[in-house]
Length: 169
Image (cartoon, rainbow, N blue to C red; front, side, top):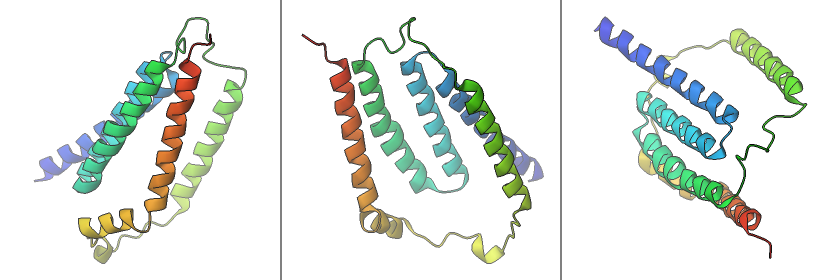
């Protein structure tokens, strides 16, 4: 049983490593289309993390909504734009050292917060008490405005991509 537990932990860490590599690839690849595919790999990996946490409903929602719908919209918008991965388009700017310094400062602060925070584990808080029915009611009741707002932003992004891709006459 200990070997099975160790294999599960190794699998989770491997999945996290794959997510990290795909996230780095997403921001460093020169082709916007390949970056979108790397984003899809990150989202699928997050669904895998949900599965390891026994949140099957959230994993399926992650795959259906984000990987299915949102990534289709992003790839459609990328395909409509022209010359975004052309060789003459500059992929970096003078602010890269400042961005790296900001990332390092953020990671330093985040590590300090994680190390100084007490993480008490209480057995009564480790069991999930929320059912899929309650989660669905919350999504369609309390959080429906957030979903509608996201849909407006996605439609605006698609219209913006169409306007950019349109050839001027």
